[in-house]
Image (spheres, helix red, strand yellow):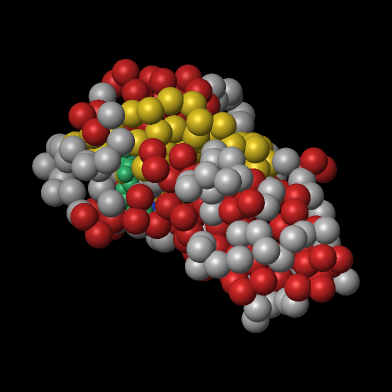
Length: 256
Ligand code: SAM
């Protein structure tokens, strides 16, 4: 690991298998001039290849020591390094058409995905490695155990595609879990029109807060059964039975 001691608190499991580096870079297929933004470049396994292909990368790294190494290694004309927390990063400030890439720090992957969803208007696509279990949740269908808040919140904004699985042995240190690479593409005009995004988020969170409860009970603090019926939703169902479109319709009835 080039003398770097991996920090658990930053979820540092570095990609150490060239085969998977090549597959991720091929999946992104960066072209010269594209705006590539990498989250958590670490020891630059992906960064170096992305720079080779695109000419320039903007990368956000929270670890001060890694940031110093990256600054030393790469010409600033090739790598714009932002030292800081990707959770606070204003992607929109970089403009539009951003192509986000990252072997994400798994301890903050959900909030990072929510942040990317909030800035989706500025993104062209997102190719990220996550815990396989998170990708299973992102791609789940209604009525399954994996279907939940993360599924609904992300799929109201993105089409999500699972690309391939990466085994623990591809990383150093070796993690306990399988990983998977996913591609998220903003739905844009195909996205359901959410009248009040904060209200939508509240409805979805409440519906899944106690999965065993019917919507009548789970949503008791958010709306009454009549509002559900007005949205064409049976209050006796559980949240997991509702599609993304159902949730949007319900939230829009409440907003109206
Ligand atoms: N991209 C490298 C690779 O594939 O080998 C490193 C991946 S490692 C799983 C996650 C990286 O994200 C580490 O470099 C870590 O320091 C960085 N990181 C962790 N939390 C972060 C945060 N909140 N914002 C930006 N970078 C973060």
